[in-house]
Length: 251
Image (cartoon, rainbow, N blue to C red):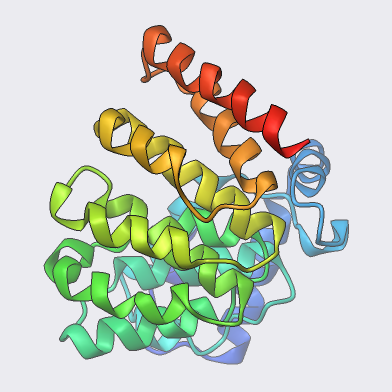
């Protein structure tokens, strides 16, 4: 992609942003648009321009070489690509302090209204590790939000803590406490639970035997464990044996 230098700006204007949006639309891949709109079922096909992630990352990287904070004033939520570029630029900012980091991601969470925007940005900031310990406490407010997309953001962000045993007990407490009846919340719970089996199988199997998950989330969790390439067949068989007993008791 050529001509990205013109998007390295110290002060963005509406005309600059309109020019960027026109450029993004010129990069559309209509086959990809059809595919992508098909896997984000709660959004209209018109929400997607159809630009692939490698191209969006290049554009976002160019914008980030200039004044990214100035850019963030302009993206709306009319298109998926707008929210992704917002997230990419936000993730590339060098934050001044922890409070600014939290404020910036609060602004991003307000934009989330589908799983694709949530999952591609959550926990991806260049400064995430700088504030990782404090941010684990901060995201509790998302976990217990009444906004299902904020809850999913909190769950997906906890993936960044999955291989540190220091956080395991609190992650499990949070997963057990989430009762929001929304498919994409339940699937995030199942996905993270299955991922934790990779690192702490014995502890997680005990958790599986006794938790507060509803039947749908449990079935999703069984599916995610089954599909994992990093859980041994022996351990999968142990889970599968419990699955049969569980389903027999909940039919």
